[in-house]
Image (tube, rainbow, N blue to C red; front, side, top):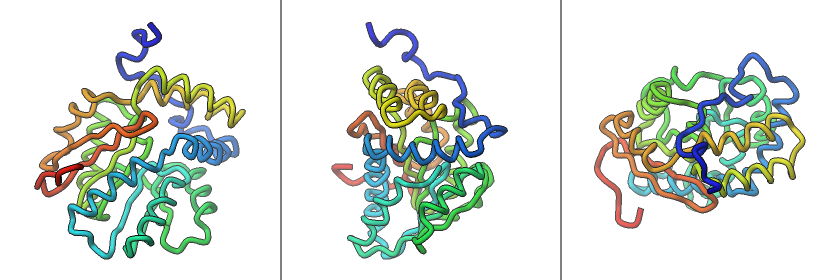
Length: 245
């Protein structure tokens, strides 16, 4: 009964963050407060899950470049940096976002981290093969229809090994949890409005299967991960995935 028709299909309403004409200090604050929600819901875990597996499929290279599109302040990449140090991988991360506020907050957040650079740009303008792995965390749900396919296609073309997508499972429990958490951790208008809406704009297995064409020759695999997330991996060489992935 709680499910209702409102979550059967992806919501099409725009989030406040999608309005590129607004922003300012309130948007910058939203990126700071979003880090609280990301920590609470372990948002970095599915991204690490996918990167680790694509790295292993690529033969565990000693160097790895990551391009995180729609990165916001890029906080989920802290775990990638820790992981790379643990495994002796020389990692370089580029954080890409279209808004000035996100780029400024990311640059401030990583001001003492030489392995991270921040770039303001459009995901649809990425050069081919510009990073080993292209990631998008809580980014794809901002797009619908043909635009969604275009974004995924651009991410695939920009990668050498493949793509990792980390996004939200559209479920009533997740919606309630985010609605409550947003009001507990922040009074920011963006957080309170966009948090629950992002769940309603989230994904289910049929949504991921519909993106297989956008993966081109790459092989798309999705896995449900704890706290209502999906880790989606697109491997470029189409060689399949190792057992247990």
